Image (cartoon, rainbow, N blue to C red; front, side):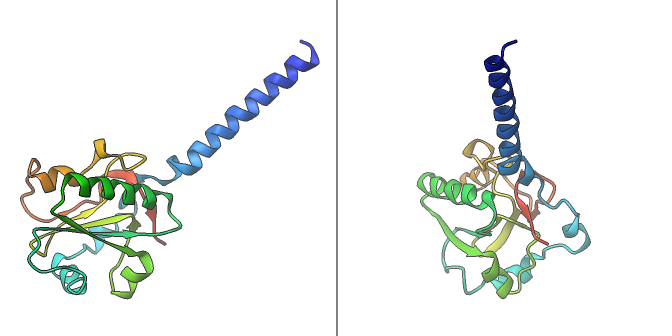
Length: 171
């Protein structure tokens, strides 16, 4: 092999390695079980406590309201925000409130990972957990769409820490 071919092979190998590392950093590093440490099993998020803490954030007389808790340092949060914007176009009755992690903590909420979706039906907490179950919070893997449209019926409150999702654990 001549020098130019060797250099091209080395550059190609570096490009592949760099691309793989970037893919891991931007996607796979934040993909996993939402409640990886099992904290919700030890101390569950109680619907009534959350409802009281968020009572000033919720609007009266609205069927569906979503509170999305995000962290600006988490890549997954931008995916979740985009997902909710598209969701609002499909479900115009869904009211969305975004809270930054610091705001949620100031309200006394104990957040295990972001982005965290809290879905309320008639001001009653119905769901807490990730918005979708894939790397980029896509519409195809949405957990919210089926609940709001009525195609997924929940028997009661779902504290969803077991799904895999794009999330950033909170230390």
